[in-house]
Amino acid sequence: MTQPVAITINAGSSSLKFGMFSTTGEIAELAVGLVENIGAAPRLRVSFGAGGDRVTQDLSGYQAADHQGALQTALALLRDRIPDAQVRAVGHRIVHGGAAHAAPVQITAPMLDTLRALSPFAPLHQPHNIAGVEAAMALFPDALQVACFDTAFHRTHPKVNDMFALPRAYYDKGVRRYGFHGLSYDYISGELARIAPLLHAGRVVVAHLGNGASMCGMLGGRSVASTMGFTALDGLPMGTRTGQIDPGVTFYLVEQEGKTLDEVRDLYYKRSGLLGLSGLSNDMRTLEAADTPEAAEAIDYFVFRIRRELGALAAALGGLDAVVFCGGIGENSRLIRERVCAGMDWIGIELDRARNADNDMVISTPLSRVRVMVIPTNEELVIARAAHAFLSAGDGQAAAE
Ligand code: ADP
Image (tube, rainbow, N blue to C red; front, top):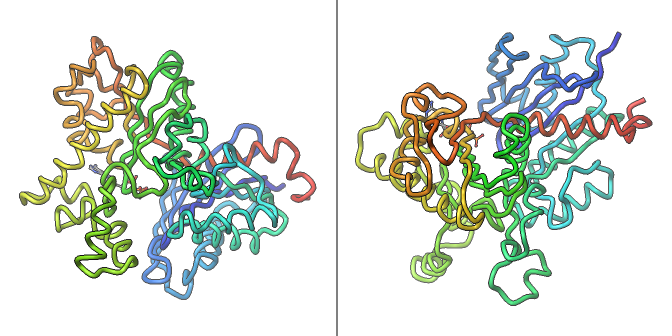
C-alpha cells in the first residue's frame, strides 16, 4: 500500500523549509522541517506530526551543498520514517507572481520561464525559489508542481494602492506595489472565516511579525492595503532590513559616500533594521534580553512603526474591528504585543494583560471594541492545500500515474 502525499518547499537563500502532507481525504500534516545554513554548516530539523517526534541532524557540507542536496537529504530522512509515501505533488512558495497571478498555478515548462522572467523583480529571492522547483522537478519528474505566490493575495487591492506616483509608463512595465507574505495572510484570513466569521467579514489588520515583517489591511478577508510595496524591503523595519526609507538616502549614500548600488543593497537588506539599530542582533529574543540603550531603541522604533502603520491601515479600511498578530514575534512576544496595543483605546483596543501574558488566542478584554487575537500562521499548509486542490481537480492525474 502506498500513501499519496504532497511535499511543500519554501527555498530561501541558505535555507529550505519543507513539509510532507497526506493527500488522502482531508489534507493532514505528516512532517515539517528545515535545513538551514545550506552550503556552510547545514543543520536539519524535522518534526513528525503535531506532538510527534523531533529530529535534529548536523549535515556535512557535502550532503547539503546546494538546494538539491538539502532536499535529497531531507527526503531520505522522510522516506525512512514514512516509507509508504508516494509523492504526487510538490507545492512551492514563490515570492513573485507578477501582476497576472492572483492564485496558485501549475508549473509547466513555459510557466517556469515566466517565473524566471520575474526574477529581476525579486533578485534576492526568486532565483532560490526557482532552484527549489528545479531540484523538485529532477527528483519527482512525474509529480505535479504547483507555484503559490507571496504576491497573489494582494492582487485584490485597489488600483490606488497598486501605484506609485511615477510617470505612467513605469506602472505598465510592472513598477507596482505588489505586497508580500501573502501565504501567511491567506492562512489567517481562512482561520478568521472559520473561527470568527463576523470579524472576517469586517475590517481587520494582520501584523505578520517575523524576521521579515509586514502588515495587511483586510476587508471581508481580502487584501485592501499592505505595508510592503515593490519589494519586500518596504514598510516595517525587520530583522536586517530597513523597512520604509526615504529614497533620497540612496542618492546621498551613492553621491556623497561613494557607495556602489550593490553596497547600498547589502546595507538595506542585510545590515539594517533591528540589527543595524541595535548593533547587536536581528533576533528579537536577544534584544528583549539585552539591557543596552541601543537594543531598547531598536525595539522602540519597531513598535513605533507598527503603531503608525496600524493607524494608517485602519484609515484605509475606514475603521477597525480586529487586529491579528502572527509570525515568530507576533505569536511569541508578549512584550511587543503589549507595547503595540498600549494607549490604543482611542482606536478601540483594550488589551487584557493576563491573556496576553498567557499567549491566549484572544488577548483583548471582553469590552474591547476591537478584538485582538494571536493566530499562529501556517504557510506550509496553504501550499499543501493548493497542491491538493490541483490533484483533486484531476490536473495531476495523468502526470502522477
Ligand atoms: P521568519 O520570518 O524567518 O520565518 P520567524 O517568523 O520564525 O521568522 O520569526 C523570527 C523572529 O521571532 C525572531 O526575531 C525571534 O527572535 C522572534 N521570536 C521567536 N520567539 C520569540 C519569543 N518567545 N519572544 C520574542 N521573540 C521571539
